[in-house]
Amino acid sequence: MAANDFPSKRAPFYKDVPDEQWFDWRWQLSHRLNALEDFEPVLELTASERKALSSGHLFRVEITPYFASLINPDDPNDPVRRQVIPTDLEMARFTGMMEDSLSEDAHSPVPGLVHRYPDHVLMLLTTQCASYCRYCTRGRIVGDPNATFTRAELDAQIDYIEKTPQVRDVLLSGGDPLVLAPKLLEDILTRLRAIPHVEIIRIGSRVPVFMPMRITDELCEMLQRFHPLWLNIHVNHPNEITKELAQACDKMTRAGIPLGNQSVLLAGVNDCAHIQRKLVQDLVRIRVRPYYLYMCDLVEGGGHFRTPVSKGIEIIEGLRGHTSGFAVPTFCVDAPAGGGKVPVMPNYVISSSDHKVVLRNYEGMVSTYEEPLDYKPHDPTTCPYCQHKRVEVGQGGVFGLLDGQQMTIKPEGFDRLHTRGGGTHRLRMDSDKWKPLGIGDTGREEE
Image 1: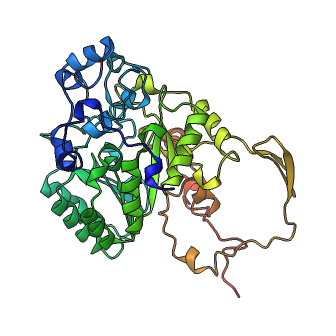
Image 2 (image 1 turned 60 degrees about the horizontal axis):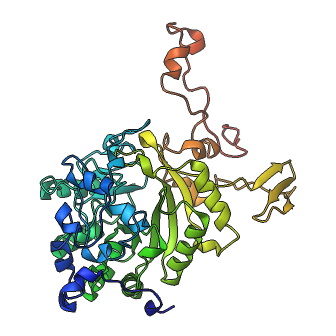
Image 3 (image 1 turned 30 degrees about the vertical axis):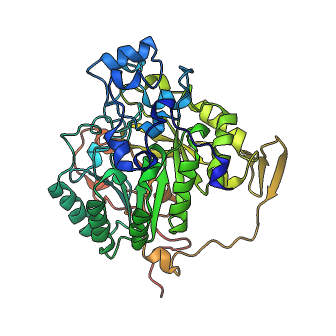
């Protein structure tokens, strides 16, 4: 599908801007809209928007002229508008609201680095973005031009990765890594690629969506030197897919960079299965694989964007089987308090026995799958991959139980509660009575 099949928009206010300026990403950054007087020539503000823009206590407002041009100025409920222009609803508090809803700070061994999962880390390279989403997960740190990460902090992040061999995957985020000075980004990528155990580098960026002119030939030539490198963009609505975004994605894919999309389920923006189906189908037309559909996080200012989890399940019901399988994202809740990404989907398994599983498909057809009766279990004692487990004991979760790493997962304080204040005696002498064994392993030496 050619990029020309998607619209190219420029607000009337910008019609006299020369193309050499309009398609210059530095011009876009230096002409962002952020104050009441910036918006008035471009669109008619509502009373709620005026009140929010007049407040000095809201999360930072910055919108590139390009992205502002995607807004229908006559529609106060325009889905692009709702994502980036504040309303007074941001001032409302709600039950469950948190400053750091994902508990990233608690999983940060050095400033700006989050190590939540066993084999991959998140590097926050900057607090700056091309434009600012009103539901930003990291609103507590993002947007302050005077509080970005220092060279010393970036050095500490890389030093931690160098000293932590289980880290094989590094995600660069922020803020937005693609607003960094090109030489600084190149330096960070060079240093990461020099670490032997770092296999994959990923970048999370909304710059291609907010400012596609940043995706230059020079940038793509630089990025492709650091393969395997992946990049996820962030599109929430079909109206954000334009000729310019399609061209930017085409440049990146031609440079060998696999592209994914992470979107957020937002009330009044994309909380509709038909909108989501159009979104994912347009994404795959420009060679972007839908990756995640997130629930909106419990962040300050984002309460009016929240939907029930059931809305996301309904949307997946409207996608699975109704469009190509690779166009269906994983719907997940990024669980509060550091619970991580928890996938949620409709129930397709109806029942099961020791030899059959009863399934239903997207149409409601019910079928059975016959289980094998002579399956020989995988033998971990002869498997070289099992002998070199990457998952740390204690961080394997439910898989750790299945894999024989541990017998239980206990609530905090469980052991202390069940000692009942008793001391050490003969029934408690051996604290290691249960040891995980492989399948068929008796724990006894062969005679």
